[in-house]
Image (cartoon, rainbow, N blue to C red; front, side, top):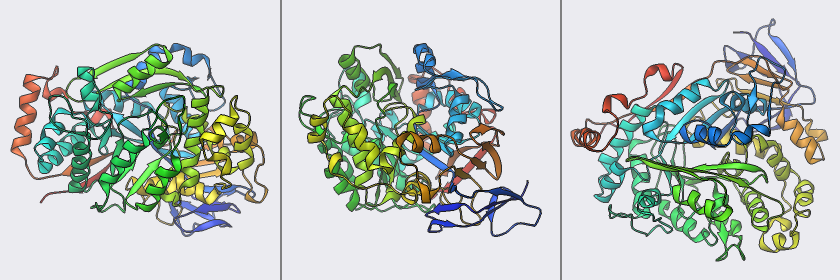
Length: 568
C-alpha cells in the first residue's frame, strides 16, 4: 500500500484528545502510524477539518424489508436517480436507495462503517447478499431476538445459559453481530392482533412480559460478553405519553455491569429515542419529554442512546414493530405491507411524509434535536435518523447544521406553520447549546466505535488504528454560517481514506476499497438441550430445512470476525 501524510489539517479526535490543533496524520499499510518515509504522498489539508471515519450505529440498509420497500415504492426512485462523475453505477432512490447508492452516499459523507439494525435470522442470506453488494463501507447486522419463540420460552423459564447458547448459535448461523430486540413481545402479540404497550403486558401464549424479555436478554448478552450491548427498540413506539414506558424500560438496566473484553462500558443501547420521548395523552396535546428522559440517561453511565432525528422529508418507514406499522397505516391511510417471519419476528412497511405544516411532525423534529443537545456525555449519544424511518441517512449533514448552529435551527423552528404551538410544546427554543466539531467527532466516531466494541481500531486517529479518515472542506476558524453551507461541506468530503486507501476525492468516488463484513463468533459450552430444541422446532414448525438455514461463506467473502470465549 502507498504511504501518505496528511499535512496542515485541523484535527478533531477524542481518542487522542485533539481539539482542532494542526497535526500531521501519517498512513502506512492501512494503519495510522507515527511517521512515514520521505517518499510518502502528501495530502494538503490546509484550512480543512480532519476526523476519523464515521460509524452509523443504527440504520436499515440491507435485507428483505428494505428490498420490499424498494419494489413496493417505485415512486421513491423518482426523487433522486442519476449517474454522477466517478467510477459509480447509476444511483437510485432517496429513502430506500439501491445498495450501490447506499455505499457511495455514506462514503461521500465520511462514513466507513454502518450497522444494519434488524436482521431476521431466517432471511440472513438476503441481508448478506445486499451487504456484500454495498460498496466501500464496512457493515455488520444485528439479528432480532425479542419475539423469537426460543427466547420467549427460555426466558419464561429463567434459563439464561440456554438463552445465551441459542444466541451464540444464531450469531454463527447468520453471521450476526449482536442482540437486537424490537418491541419485546409486542410483535409476537401481533400474531393475535394484539400488542404490548407497557413492559408488564403479557405476551399471549408465552406467559412472559416485555420486562422479563429485556432483563433476560441483558443478562444473556453479558453472560456471553458480546462486543456490543443489548440493542433495544422499546415498546409503545410513537405514541403520546410513551416516555413513561421508556423510563421503565431503561430502569431495568440499573445496577447491571458490563462483562466484555472490548472496551464497552454500557449494557443497554436505547435506539431512536426520539420516537420514545413523548408526553401528552393524545396527538392533540403531544409534547416533549426529551429533558426528562435525558436527565435519567445522563445519570446512568451504563446506557447509550441514538437520536432517531426526524428530517422533515417524505420517507419510507420500515420496522420489525409490526403493530406500529399497522397503527401508522391507520393514521395516514397510505399503503401498508406486513409480514410474519415464522418463529422469529415480523415487519411492516408504510410510506410517511414528515411535513413542516403538521404540528406533530414539527414537535418530533424538535425532540430529536433536544436529545442530542441535552446529552452531557457526547460519547454516549449518537446521531441517527433511524434510516429511513425518521428520514434518509443522506440528511445527516442537514442534521449537523441544526445541531451546530442555533441560528440555523431557530430559522427552521420559526418557519413552521404552527411555530407557537411547537415552541410551547418543546424545549428547543430555550436551548443555546451548539455542538462543536469535537463533540460531533464523539457522537459520530469514537462514541459509536466504543459502544460497538470496536474502539481498538475504529473511531479515532491514534497510531495503530485503522486508517479510516475523513477530510472536510471546513475551516474551523471560518466555520460556515448558513445551513446550506454547513450541509454542503459535510455532504461531500474532500477526501475519504478507507483502510489507508483514498476512496473519495472532492465528493467523487475514485476507488471501491476493500469492504468487510463484521460478525461475532461466540464460543459457549456444548448445550445438548438447545441443539435438541432447535432440531425439534425445525422439524415441527419451520418451512425450511435446518441445513438450509446458515449463511454460507460465499455470501460474506470478506469477513472480520470478532471472537468471544464464553466457555464456563
